[in-house]
Image 1 (cartoon, rainbow, N blue to C red):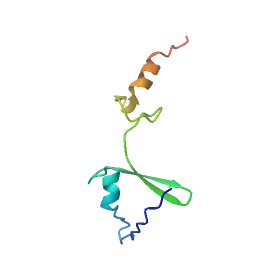
Image 2: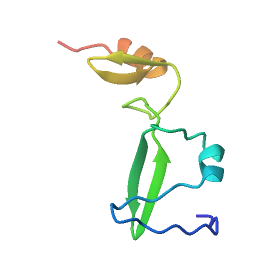
Image 3: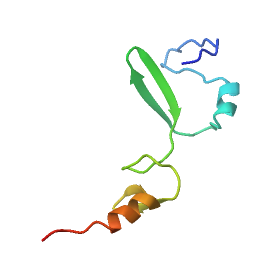
Image 4: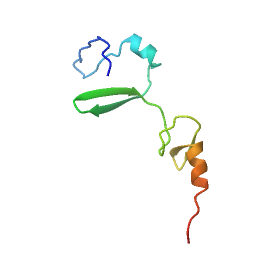
Length: 84
């Protein structure tokens, strides 16, 4: 991980402000969803991007049964032959 040198305090409601420079760098705007990950003793914030449930791709997504699948995985699924 690369340190930005930016330090922010947590307010009384548990909030932390993400500096405008970082929001601009990662194209984060007001109301954007942010994912929160934990890696050992680190908390990682990531802009949420819908992705394929199988491969994680974020491009060319289609919805099937309320799940997102990329067109590549959808093509692979369509080719699966069921044994009887």
